[in-house]
Image (cartoon, rainbow, N blue to C red; front, side, top):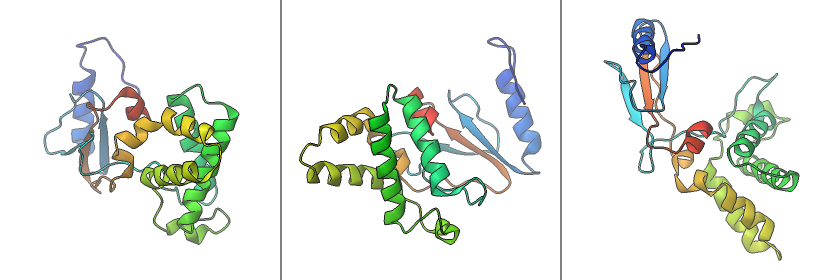
Length: 187
């Protein structure tokens, strides 16, 4: 469904009406980037630097044909690259290695789909791994540069908090209006 139109043409009202009609049939999740999609009866959660809940980009899809840690590493790496460009092949390689280590530290291996049900790592695990690696290598400049580049994802902490509760039926509205556009894109 694509809803387009000029300012004031009713796009937000149309989205609210659709969400209201679907609320009994399924779970409706509204990602509210501007804070203007409040729908009556929706469970609203604000995402900001002091939020109780967050979103974990490292949660795995359990689809054995297209999910698992390899697929999720690719998704996260690509989103970080798009958000914090330019990012060269050395930085992408470092990031990939650290993401792989985060999953392995939780006992999650791509070759073992039963391990995909283990608790996934979060960006707090990734940040801690960055700090350990920086402290343990003789020349940490490349790691420090990459960590600095993606530091907004660590600083806001929404990627290290418990997952937002999503209703099985009804409307869940996630107000992301207080986040930067880069963090909104990643979320």
